[in-house]
Length: 221
Image (tube, rainbow, N blue to C red; front, side, top):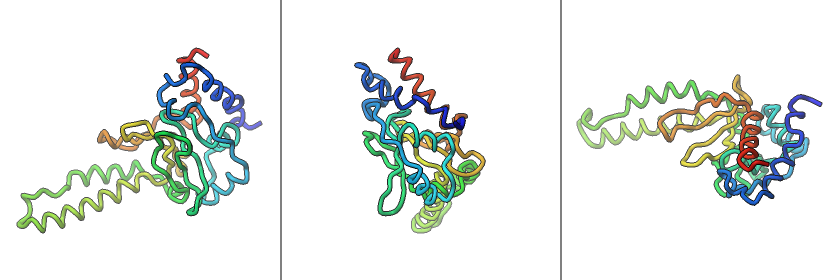
């Protein structure tokens, strides 16, 4: 058995056991996911996801999908689920009361360059047009519209190469990086507090298992 496969032995049973606890809804986010897990995915399904991604899934996450479930119970308001739709595979909030935004496999398979783009965004912040610098209102509106368009382009591009994995609340989300040197790591989108998309220092297995251990300790199971 590979190491990442051993990581998930018994985890599905542990999660589902929490659903039976009379105070399970006291765990943050549990009222939204109810400690329910989607069915596990097949090897054939994972290969289809990877074909749309253009890269292999991170090993620990792949093992989770095969052994624990496609989504559902997990940190914050629960895990997004890889789902096949008319436009191909994408991550959606199946069974979640408070899902994160969907991510297409094609978008998640692009290069992850959030750190590099943050520098450009910070510089662009300092270049926001101010009305006093323009002779007419129309000149200012045009300049500001161009600036805003470029800002939104860079802002959206920061999300490429990762999957929105879990909604934290208040606009904050957890992401799983799919490409590049940070592949397999969990990052956080902290842009609503005027920060950036930043690393948590955890891979997927540590991130998920830490959540499960905290939930078990809280409910003393």
